[in-house]
Image 1: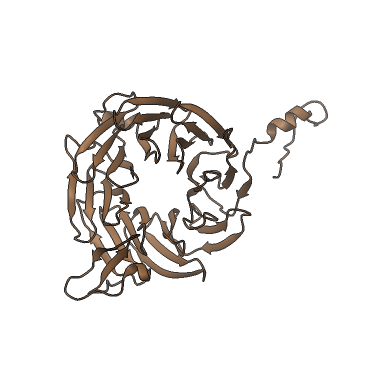
Image 2: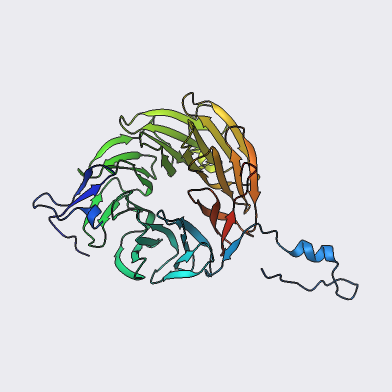
Length: 415
């Protein structure tokens, strides 16, 4: 696809227009972007009493399932899940079957089946206003769909895809690829801007809340803060202060002033986005993390996140440790131990509860203030690979290696 020339993208925030993308400075830009802007499988008993099972034996074969609904349209592992930000009533899941499905959370009805991908769909996300959904597969095929018309409105093929994310307040899509590039497109016109770096994977990325900057982590341990309008890296964090292994995850706090990064080197770094300075470093044992390549083989950081209502942050490790730190003192507050490796964590929007999904197929909710488990939900027969929580923290939608996505209704003593 040829890039259109002479276009500038302007992004509307809540109170002002954010001019973010200058696709070509030789000509004036177009209109503002924001303006476009339960079945039981009884097996043969094989015993010596005539083939009949006792009631207890039959009950033991029935998998314990806490879910309210099971979405079973995928024919391979389900790798990703997202909820639409506008209403939280729609989920999108992507899977090993080279498909994405948009479906209604209340009853599991398929609203849109997204086909045409060449490989496993590992990224599927709604635009900020829920009018569009972007799906991306491992080979680099990206497709954008109009939710109302149920039509594919744009597609593009890049190198092997690492991550995909919409801008928080405009119809702008960003992606990171195996060749180290970050791409940015205006949708649906497809006007494009690329942010080039060293030839190693752009493994994780996040647009900051101001809409003007993005933070990208790379395979060599480097973290870059990009100016989306100018197209240059305003901060590059590497070397002694940076990570000593590939970035696995990153998250920003509510105002975007801080970014927390995780790596296969076994540590998490706290970075000030205004100065580009590393202001904190954390390891699973609660001490100051040094990070080494040797740790990469043992205890990778798999997920990180900030609490929205308290000065707390969470770091999840492959060995099953969920570490809760006090943000101001950087002291370990609680350690929540899991029996299996943690895949993903997410804080509830308006509480101090943090949820985790694990390789053992369980979803767990933890009170970060006490370190105590609040509740545990089961139903999957394989690892949970991703999950999403709605704004009210009343439901969780999961994606699993058992080819299923499930909806769990969260019940807690305080409700």
